[in-house]
Image (cartoon, rainbow, N blue to C red):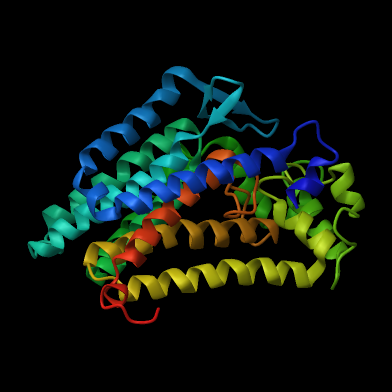
Length: 349
C-alpha cells in the first residue's frame, strides 16, 4: 500500500518503511537475545534515556505545523535528513519501566495502597504531560491507554478506575478551557457534523470515507486507485492509510488488514497466558495497549467515528520511528515467549 501511495509523491514511503523494518527487526533480535528480564533490571537507564529523548525535542526538536492550527514539536532531526520521533521509543521504554514498577508493587503486596496508586499515576503522567507539551496529544492518549491496560491486568482494584473516571468528568470544563487547543475543540465540534465544514475540519475524514466507499467489495485493484494516485485524502500515507486500503483492496482488503492485527493481538494474549513470570504478562499487555488503542483510534477516525488525532495504524502506516519501535516491542514479547513455562518444559507450542 505504501508503494502505491508513493507513486504520486516525491517521497518514497515504501523504501523508508522497508529500511525501518530492517532496523526494527535487528533491534528486535537483540532485545530478544538480551531478554526482558535483564532489560527490566536496568529500568533506571531506560527511564533516563526515555526522559532525555522526550526533553530533547524542546531544545533541538523539529516543528510540524498544519493549516488547521496543528503545531507539534515531537521530532528530532538526525544526520542524513532523517527525523526520529522520541515518543515512539518512549512507548517501549514505558512498557519496561511501568511493568517493573507494577511487578515490584505486586511482589511486596502494595499494589492497591493509595500512596502507590498515586505514584503509578505520576509515573504514567510524565510521558503523557511531555507528549502534550510537544503538541502530540495522539501519543498522550496512547500512553494513557497503556497505563489503564497494564494497571487493570496487574490487578489494580476497580474502585481506583472509577475514581479516575470521576476525576476526568469533573475536569472536563477545565480541560476544555485551558488544555485543549482551538483546533482540537474545532475537531470535536465538527465531528458531530462533518458536512458543516466540508472544505475545512471535515475535509480529511469526508474524503477518507469517499475513498473507502469507492472500493466497494473488491476494490479498484492494487496500484489502480484514482484517488490514491491523485492524493485526494490528506496524509493518506500515514494516518489515513486505511482509506487507501479501502479504495484499492475494497471491503475484503479492509477486513484482511484488521484480521491480521487481530491475529497478532490473539497471539500476544496467548503468549502472556503462558508467561512464567508476572512481569512477562504485564510486558505483553503493555505492548497490546499500543496495538489495540492505535488500531481503535486510527480506524475510528478513518471511519469518522472519532475525531482526527494523529494516531497511526500499527505496522501499516508510514513512519520509520513507529514501525522500528513496534518491532522493538515485538522483541520484548518474543523474549517473554522464549522464557515461557511451556517452552521451558519443552512442550509443543
